[in-house]
Amino acid sequence: SQTIHQWPATLVQPVGSPLSLECTVEGTSNPNLYWYRQAAGRGLQLLFYSVGIGQISSEVPQNLSASRPQDRQFILSSKKLLLSDSGFYLCAWSPGYYGYTFGSGTRLTVV
Amino acid sequence: DAKTTQPNSMESNEEEPVHLPCNHSTISGTDYIHWYRQLPSQGPEYVIHGLTSNVNNRMASLAIAEDRKSSTLILHRATLRDAAVYYCIPPSGNTPLVFGKGTRLSVIA
Figure 1 (cartoon, each protein chain N blue to C red):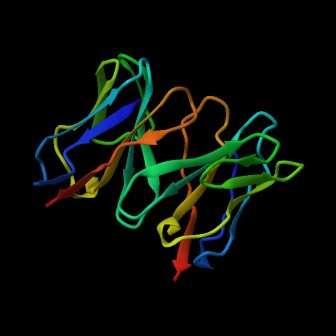
Figure 2: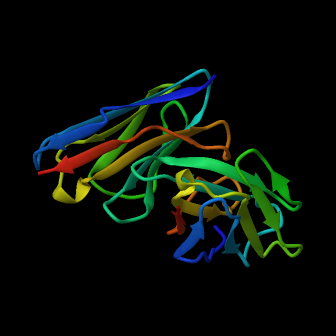
């Protein structure tokens, strides 16, 4: 069966520090991969999605970037975190454009 | 994506049926209607999806209006574990899901 792993579960980082969040999917090949963010008390915001290795679509131009170095690996990065980057980051995968499965999320607090 | 309208919040008693409405009047003829829910402190989870006819699965039923401009998610017997934010999403073609504000369902014991 397919599983999605996302880590770490919680993270506290100082302003200006770098960020790297990793997401991996097992049990499937060529999945669509997504990064969403949910700020406190707000809705889910699509940040990036990828339909294949090296193919990244950005929905929100910010100080975040995403990479897909391997078929089932999706990485969210930042060179310098801002206070406004705090939130609940969720990785998801889907076999096509339906049936999303979300990871357990990373709760990031920028201090 | 089609514009959707959902009530901000709803309340239900435990063990009773819940009907969660969604209006999506601008949906195209080929777009499926998806429902997801997000439990507190978790990522969303898939509930059900459908195109034209009503759909049932172990979690819920989806009733789709004949003109497809609205749909209703039906939880047959609400439990405390069903307390969540429910999202109705009719994506446009091959585009990623965009989550709106959804309906916050509270279940009273």
